[in-house]
Length: 209
Image (cartoon, rainbow, N blue to C red; front, top):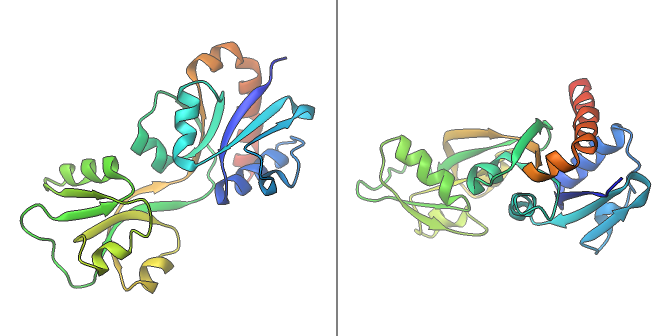
């Protein structure tokens, strides 16, 4: 049987996904995420894990260097890669929202929106009939309205604490986000039995949760 390569992001999603795999009966080393290695082989399960940046997981799966991946719905909506979404793992719950300084109006002409998600933000405001200018940032999005860089931000909200601590308020909720199991279309044909077993075992755990 060939090795099944799984791309996973480090951090919170990894921890929750690894816990699901263990519950599904897979023998996953408990210190998998503590390693400095980026590729970890688990011979007992005929699996290989690639630890990646969250935004890169869908790219690895689309290009076939990983057969399977675990990615947030936010990344999938932003990247729009050619992959199959086969299971909602119902972990890492959060949502995308529009936020800004309280009591402020957006500029009438081309208001600026700061975000890590230019694709999602552009589509959302276009659907609202608003023409905006997107300012792409890679981190500390909350800073943008505070220093006058943008009228609003579009960012991930999990507890709302970060917004509150920075004196921002949520204006609109765009979409709920959870992590999904995704599959490379070619891998699904070549390794269908292994992938189907993984999906079935994880689905059972998700339903029981």
